Image (tube, rainbow, N blue to C red; front, side):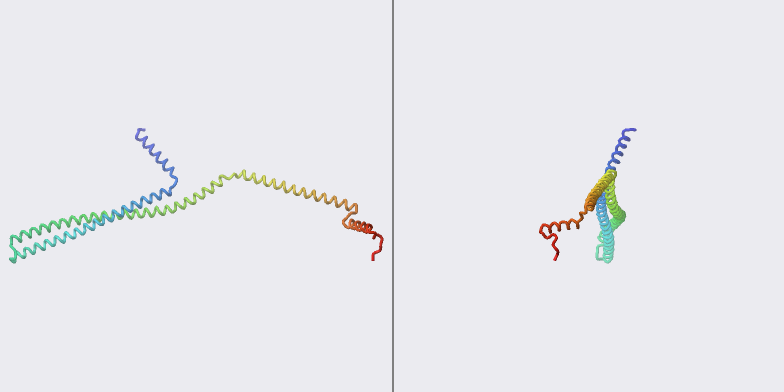
Length: 239
């Protein structure tokens, strides 16, 4: 591989690397649209200038043809006056000859201006086609830019969500939930155990009181009898 081929390969690699590093296609598209609009403005200006030159050439051709006809008419008048004797024949011939020279000059100028007019009109037609092509290209790019912006919005949101989902520690979260479930189960079992112990203690006290005959009604009767004895009312008949 010669030196130029190696340099070409290096340039290709660097250009591909630069393209790969482009991170904002929207900005690149917007810049491309700005460039196209500048080209469109220049093309419109050039089109207007060429059309103006065509109009000027057309006006020059018409003016030259009008002057040529005027010089021809003047030559005819000169010859007619000489024929009537109103003008010296030699002088009339000389002036009529000069008028015909002017006529020929203006006819040549009219022909040249007409040719220029055709050239300018052809150039204007070509420029107008370029303008229409640029307008269509700009419209197409603007439509693609809208689609691109929508796709970027969707892809960015999707990427963010997927990134968040990818960063979730599913195994760790499941393990944490299992530990929490286990802890809650232990607490629930412990609470139920305390409840059973309390219930067992209460039942034993009730069994002891029942065996001794010290229920709530018996204790109240014994307390009433003790109070009567204290007051000396024990054994007295009730009124």
